[in-house]
Every structure is written in C-alpha cells, then in structure tokens.
Length: 97
Image (cartoon, rainbow, N blue to C red; front, top):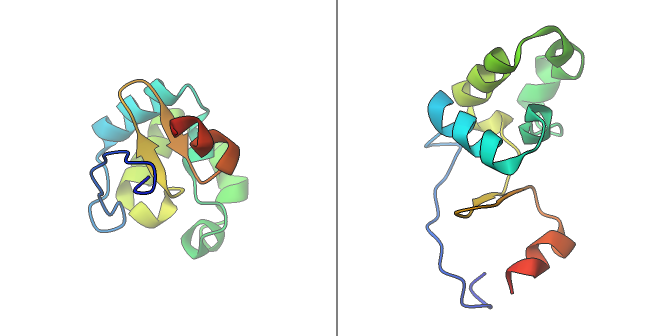
C-alpha cells in the first residue's frame, strides 16, 4: 500500500481486537460468510477444534468468539468504505492500485 501511495490507518487487531459490533458491521459489509474471518492456521483455532465446532454454533456466537481473541481473526484485514479484504490474495489486493 505504501508503494502505491494508498493511505491507511494501521490497527493491531491482536492487541486491539475489534468489538462484536465492529465485527458484525465488517462481516456484513464484506458479504462473506463468517467462517472466512477465522484464522484457520492459527494455534488457538486448532486447539479449540474450531474446524468441527463452528458448525455447531450460531452466527452471533461465531462473531462473539472472533471478538474474544484477535488471534482468531484472519489477517490482514483491510477495510475500505465499501469493501473488505480478508487475508492476503495478491490478485485482490492488486485492484487497489
């Protein structure tokens, strides 16, 4: 983003985990399923056996779980006025140029 002169505000979502309400808005804006926001390669995700457990809980509980620990959220999370990027996919991020 720096190389392309794209202005942004950096926030460490591990130390400043988004709230339930913030995540609810972000997820709605993204149009993506809630499960796409989980850091599936993270130690916490694995230790909580979330691959199996997520299918058993409600969407609200999934958002609460994400809000409980920033390590559960897939990074980077880039939020624009009308678009959300979850994780790094070069072909998507190239559209910012």
